[in-house]
Image 1 (cartoon, rainbow, N blue to C red):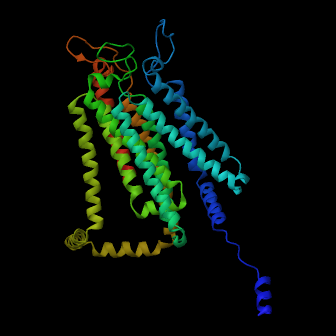
Image 2 (tube, helix red, strand yellow):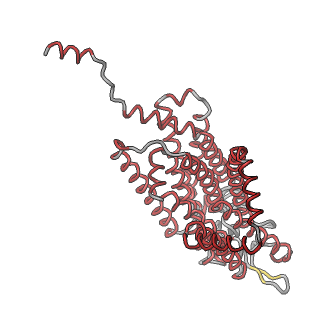
Image 3 (tube, one colour):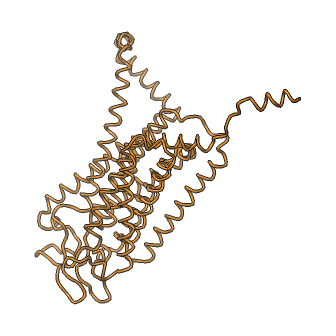
Length: 439
C-alpha cells in the first residue's frame, strides 16, 4: 500500500487548466480575426471622429447672447442629449483607438491581460456607439426608449448565450468546419459596414436640421423630415435603428468562438443579418424620397429581389421542382437531338477534370471579391440616397409650378430629370447589391 501511495505521488499529474486553455483559444481566435477586428475598429474610429467634429443638429450660423456662431445647436436646445452623445461618442472613439493599438503587436496576444483588455475595449466601443446613437439620432423619449429596449434585449440575449456555453463547456463541439469560418468572416464584413452606415445615417438624418426654433412647432436642431414628413421620419428611424442594433448584435455574436457556433446552430445570426438587410431596405425606401411613387418603386425592387431568391430556393430545395426540371431537360435534349453533343461535352469535361481544382479556388476567391463589391456598393448608394447631391431646401416655397417643403431635395426641383435619373439608378444599384450579397 505504501509503495502504491509513493508511486501515485511520484506520478506526474495533469494540471487542471480549463480556464487557461479557454483563454488561449479565445486569444488565438481573436488574433486570427485581427484584420476583421481592425476593420471594425478603424471604421468605428472614423465614424465617431466624423460625428464628433460634425455633431447631429448642426451649428449656429449667427451670434447671440446664449451662443456663438459655430457652437453646436444641440448644446443649447437639448443640453442633456448633447452631453450624452458627446461622452458616449468620445468613449467609442477612444476604445476604437485602443483596439487598433492592441492589435498592432503580435507578442501581446500571448498574454492573458491582452485578451481581457481587447474584450473590454470592444464592449466599450459597442455600448459607446449605442449610447451615442440613442442620444443623437432622436429628440423624443419614445424613440430613445425603443433604442433602450433593443439594447436591453441585446444584452439579455448575448448574456443568455454566454451562460449557456458556460454551463455546457464540458461538452463543447469540435472545431467549426470551413464553411462556418468562411461565413463568419463574410458576416463580420457585412455587419461592420452596415453598422457604420446606419450610425452615420441616424446621426445625419436625411433632410437636414432646422437652423432656428419656431414656437409650438420645432426647436433648432430638430430633423426637418420629422416636421414635414412625420410618417416617413418614423419609418426611417425605426428601420435604421433596427438595422444598426441588429448589426451590432451580429458583431457581438461573431466575436466569440463558442457563442458564434451556437448562433449558427440556432439560426440567431441569420435572423440578425436578415433584420439588418430589411432595416436598411426600409430606411432607404422611407428616407431617400418624398413621394409615394418613388417609394413604391423601391418597394417593388425589393419584392422582385425577394421573389427571385424564393424561386431560386424553390428550384434548388424542392425535390418535385428539381425532378420536373430534369425531365424537361431530358425531353428537350431528345427533341433537339443533343444526345451526341452531350456525350462529347461529357468526354471533354472528363479530360479537363484535372483543372477543376484551380477553377474551384478561383470561384472561392471571386465569391469574396463579389461580396466586398456588393457591400461597398450598398454602403455608398445607401449614403447617397439619404443625402443626395445638391442638399436640401431650408424653408418651404415654390418655383412657380412646383411646391416644395423644407427638407426636400433641391435637385428634385431645380434639375428634376437629372434627379430622377440619379434616384432610380442609385436605388437600383442599392437593391441589386443587397441581392448580390444574399445570393
